[in-house]
Image (cartoon, rainbow, N blue to C red; front, side, top):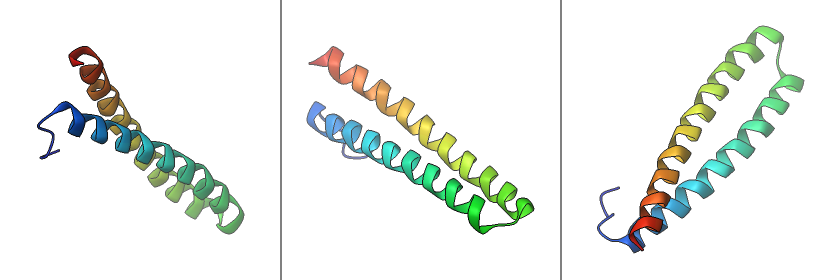
Length: 76
């Protein structure tokens, strides 16, 4: 976030974070589905918990990006 000196940089940041969040959530769904088929229950459970924590961080990043988007809309 160092280069966010003007609205154009903020808009690029906003779009990129939303894109990455969407990709991360899609990857999470695929990863969890693949784990069900490939792992024993205990290992699946541990890895699913890690995957869920990672996707929660992604959702937090999306919330920040949404706030940045609100700033862009208000300032433009």
